[in-house]
Length: 111
Image (tube, rainbow, N blue to C red; front, side, top):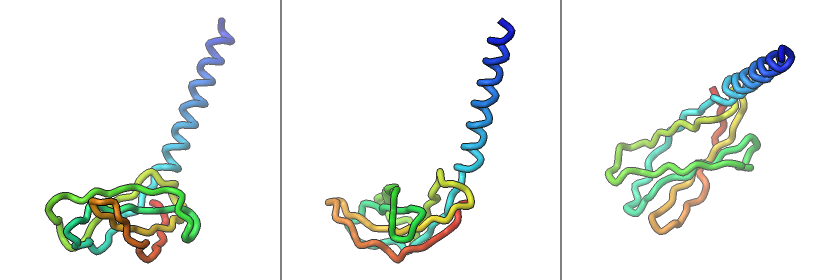
């Protein structure tokens, strides 16, 4: 019975350590800002990112509100690995699903 209790406590401590390690290393983010697209049928933007230049392994969609919010659009790309370099490009897409070409690629380190 005592060995079983020690085993349960050990498993619990290992689980907590793994979760804490994942949280500490994968809670990075990069703040982005770009000039807003002014097309009437703009539905949103798609942010492409990855850890190699021009090789995007992930993306996120940013919907735009009905009324323009200003000259620039801001977004925080979250869930990244801290201190890792990311390469990022943005596209705009219309309500009919047409997507623009990639923007100029930028790079940044997740903080």
